[in-house]
Image (cartoon, rainbow, N blue to C red; front, side, top):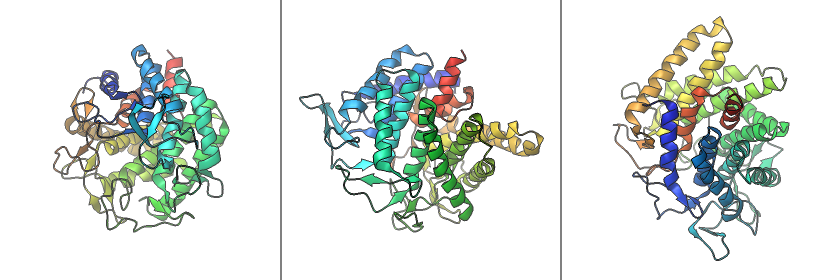
Length: 415
């Protein structure tokens, strides 16, 4: 691999191909927009986030792309009749310049979390309209998503926000937690850090109960549905079992929240480091294929592989978690010396595997491999996502913060 900075620049150049009138589209394996797929909210948000990060690094050419993303999220993908954001729209606009909804217009917590993330990063980058978008997105979170009786968010609504789904999911809450930490960095409002901490506390307790193999699926009153989709283990959106990649992501979020809490003068949360370390250890032990390398997608609750497909995002999040945990443990002094060494070795081994198997060419990363290392398309077709790789490339050069966007903003101020 070239330097991380050079690879990030190539990645954002490749990502520019996704530009569409209504947002950012789904790139195929060759970097061409797949017109058979709609313009999706989560992709538009992630691209806006990545281009805003690049803008903070001084890349003036991407400012127009970040601005386009903010505009699309402010007007094109916005449901002007009922509020919130459409999950998907057509590539073109209607006669008034608005987006044309694809499907029933159902509102999803997962995608709405990325609106907050994109708006937070755009705000920190100084992108025109970013703060107004963030204010709207946070108001939407307050009014429709946060369930104070649980300290977590609901999963989805119908288009008119009249009926919610009879299901709660950990994945949507994970990305909401990430978004709230970014919102804290962008606004300085303690509320969003406290809500992120509430979600993380739940995950810490859940992890202890389940030997750090986190269940993903719950009833509306947050009772675990351990067998959910056991008959559809490869379900593309809600697979059965535990997801090692999410264990890594949660570990990183715990440590970022710890950083933020200490910085504002709170006592160090004594559960943070043990929780992050346990999540990383469990995900690494269960997820890494000792014979062929790479991380499997899912396991059962005894740690046996269920879906052996290698998703690029899992490797990226493993690298991020190893880096963040290693830095945190190193700050604690000699008592974690062996852990620091082991974590550094894992970081190097995992990154080398990514370079050999996932990186096709500068800025081009395979999103899915089968267990034999061949390019797969079971869940991920093409190369629609720049977000996971972008953050993996940036983190080694950034200071600690509650979010990647906040860390990039700090790095910019230190220049």
